[in-house]
Amino acid sequence: MLAISLEMSLEPWQAINDGVMGGISTGRMIETTHGLSFQGVVSLENNGGFASVRRTIELDLSRTSKLRVRLQGDGRTYQARFRQDSSFDSIAWRAEFDTTGDWQTVELDFTDFAPVFRGRKVPQAGPLVAGKIRQFGFLIGDKEAGPFRLKIKSIEFL
Image 1 (cartoon, helix red, strand yellow):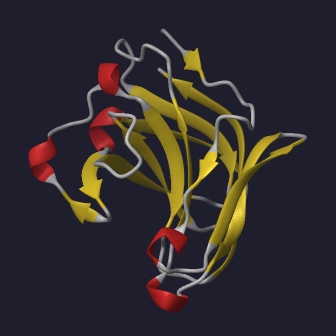
Image 2: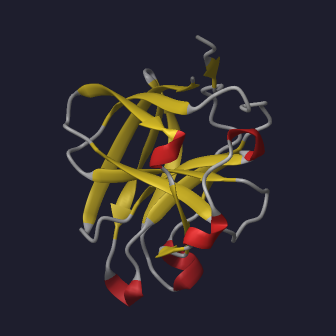
């Protein structure tokens, strides 16, 4: 089985939070002893409610069909998100996953990802195409205010 690992370095990650729409949520990626941690505080004030991080991917994923992440969450629901272009504001393909509070391995088939634009479904965008993936990230937008933390030990494409 072909497995492509994503480099676990802080440098390529960019935070995009609801401040782009007037919200006041905070979120960022930090380095820790176990790898990386996506953490911050979600606020529902000012029509906010999400925090996200993303990074560009310059890997050929055309022979892969699945995402596998080793992580420890906080019991909240997160999204893994892909983009098939390098744009800041474009269609994203998302799949949700629940966290348990313990270390867990989350596997998501690329067919589990649905196209959305600013939270609205865009079925005419079609399925996620592995060979076109240009960005990857995480988003929390579960309509719950408060702190969040998603520890990430590894990210692989299978």
